[in-house]
Image 1 (cartoon, rainbow, N blue to C red):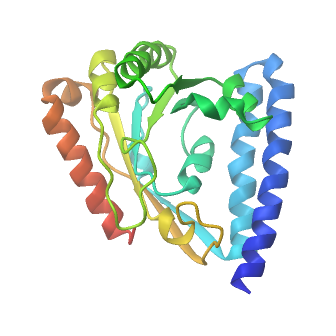
Image 2 (cartoon, one colour):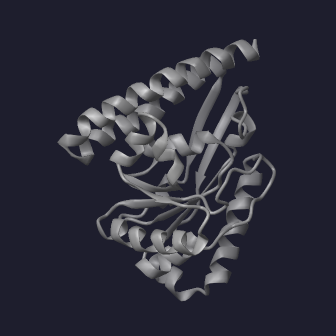
Length: 238
């Protein structure tokens, strides 16, 4: 039964994703706000299907920590779930992503249409400069910036190497940092076809203000973020 439910869910997921991508592209000429409505509708629909078909429920904690100003979101990366959920979780933002995603027909075009910082992973120095330059621009315009500091997905219970790009961007831009932990990898595994029933819990941790970010040494701040995100991830069962 688990296999059948996952098969049905995945089939529907790959139908609605290009559909919402097309709708986003069609509405983009009317402005970012119009296209962002479809960007938010996509994860909302996925959440509904995941609950009805796979028995996956969603619980969101810590939204009282959201700042009024644009900031850098540094999130645990375990599965595709947290990535696709972001448009419905936080205000309009830009992703840090690998450039190759733009080449995916329709979906990649939609990513390009609502802006992203598309880096080339082969040149870390150039990628970091691009994140800082473009990230500062978007933050100044009031767009949030989402970074997965591990760079790639780690399986539930594992910790990837936390990279300093998000911290450097926040310090250079004079922005705060909103950490995010979750347990999505338990029920929507990394590269996993099978989706398991349960409750995915997303927890936003206390906001680190721009003043705190600027006052802390870079390595100390990165170590604090890693410790806080990983501790909360484990508390959530991830």
